[in-house]
Amino acid sequence: MEESYIGTVTHYFARPMVCAIKLEDELRTGELVAFRGHTTDFQQQVTSIQIEHAQVGTARKGQEVGVKVDDRVRKGDKVYRLE
Image (cartoon, rainbow, N blue to C red):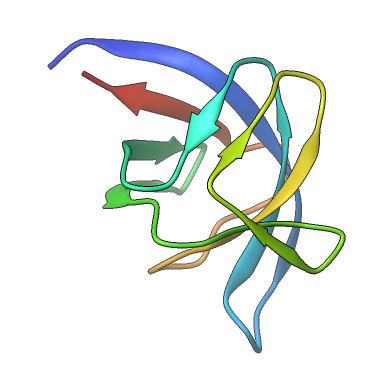
């Protein structure tokens, strides 16, 4: 599978299992992404994207978004789109 870098994790909220991602490329719900870091390495489908607590289907480069995650991520982890 081909990977393209789309952003970096800036925060992780353990209780709702949501992370904040600063986007360097567009992100859409339904896309397959990979989270990679020093101790992080998993893939998941994006099921929920929020901007300022509002549900959206697409987020653009430069935005900071909240994404529901299946596993723990850490600040500084990289996010890649899998194609």
